[in-house]
Image (cartoon, rainbow, N blue to C red; front, side, top):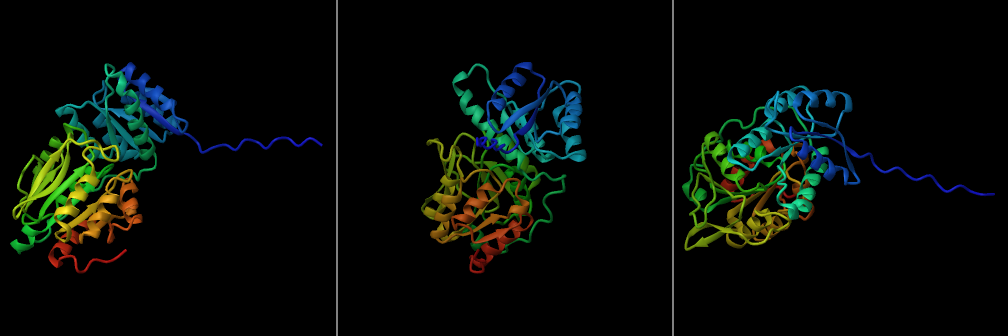
Length: 363
């Protein structure tokens, strides 16, 4: 008797994407990139938010890509309404300009998961790399935790009251997807005499200066884009510029910044691992490491090196992460001493600074 072959097993359903952009060329290019992937498909395209609104209602996509500057309704206005009425994963498609970076940061505040630059049609050799970037971000957006907006920050924590502790200690932070809002949450609670803070957030050149300037207006501490050979001061936060790795070094008794345009690490420049490894080398037990929300594994190896050098380290917990990738990897490798919700990280960091790390809770 002939036995029929077993039926093919259906794979997981494809991620359903709607592309919203007023440029027909961009819509076509993004559709081609997304449809070339085995695990996602474009189920609709829209030239403006009004058409997009109807498509979202009828097609129920997993992710939308959203332009900022569009006719009939601004992309930010549409995003604001969408996240209030029907929160869903959104990846912004933004121009790499000062105005574009300000608008993109506002989009992240409104609830967008991530962003990519608008593709440049005159740089064909970079299209494959661009395709990898946007499809990776769509995949992570599809599984990101989307919440309706709540107020960030909280009361500024009490001053340390001990200048010696704050000048000897450093806080070292790494983040990626979802990190702009997480970093804001941590920095807004820092008192003016907190230790110097070094931060690597995965962002392109041009965005980091706007990000630092925005934080500087919101925080009690000074926040700036890091420059080469700056002395690291208490009450200051230094954000890695989008074009360079940020490293820590020492000059005599002083901690200093160093910028490097060395090759990307974990596909990133700036990379969290580069910053964490320099902190392990030059600060060791005088540092507190923090790894926040983000996709991938950047920072996991460096955080373990910091721990082995005597640092006390905190990983953001899964429930408060937009994407749990980076903290999860750091925890798995044994680099984290504590797993802490975002709302409690600033307080816990300062407690470790005050205690010299002696009360860290082992994972």
